[in-house]
Length: 325
Image (tube, rainbow, N blue to C red; front, side):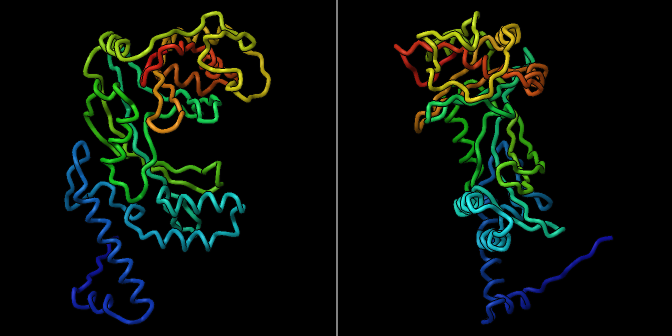
C-alpha cells in the first residue's frame, strides 16, 4: 500500500518563515538538506551513474542530514558508550567521517562512507588486495579483512575527490588501470570498536588492467625497487636486509607456524606491492589474490599472513616512492 503526501509551496514557505524555535529548526534543516543535495547533484561524474528522477547517487538521507542531527543523537545515547569511545565517536561525527541516525527500532546506528577500487587481473583471476601496512609507529599489522584499495569519505567530501585520493595513493599503478563500472555496496554489521550497529556504504569502482601483468611488472621494475621473500623464512630467523626491523615484528601470542604454509603462500603471492603513503611514514602492502587464496587467509588462525609479511625483504640503499617486493 502506498501513500502520497502533497506539500503546497505556499504552505511550505509559511512553515519556513515562522518565528518559533520549531519552525526555525525546520527551516535550517531544509536549507541544509537542499544545499547538500545540490552539492551531490553537480558533483556526479562518470563512472557514477547520471542522476534521474528515480535515483541520485550519494543523495540518501545519511548523506544529506545536517551535522546537528548526529550531534544531538550522540548526546542522547551518551550514557550507552564508554567515555573514551564517546570522545572518539564525537570526533568522527564532528569531522564528518560518520553520521548517526536512529533506526525504526529506536536504536542508534552509525553510517560510514567508503570509496574503494576492485582492480582485477582477469587473465589470472586475481584482485588487488590490501595485505597489511607498516604504521608510523614502526609496527607491522596485517589487514584483518583483506580490504580493497580504498579510503573513508567524509560526509561533505565529493566522491570524485575521494576517488582521486585513492588513485593518488596507488602511485604509478593508477596509470595502468581503467575503471569500467560502478556500484554502491551497502551492508550492516556491529562495530567492534564502538559496539554500535554500523551501516557501511561503499562506492565500489570496478577496474581492469590496461596492460598484461608482464608489462606491468616491467613498468614497476623501472620505477621501483624489486626484491623477493626469503624462502627459508622462520619466525625466529632474522636478516640484515629485512624490510621489517626487530621492533616492527607483530605483537601476537606465541604459536607454532608451519613453514610449509608460509612457503605455500609465497607461491600464491610471489611478490607484493609496497606503496608508501604521500603523508607520514605509513607503508601499505598489496598483493594479487585469487578468491581461493583470499578465503584461505581469512580462515587461517596460525598467523601465516603475518609470517609472509615478515619474510619480505627490502634493500634500503635505493628507496623509491613505489616498489615491488
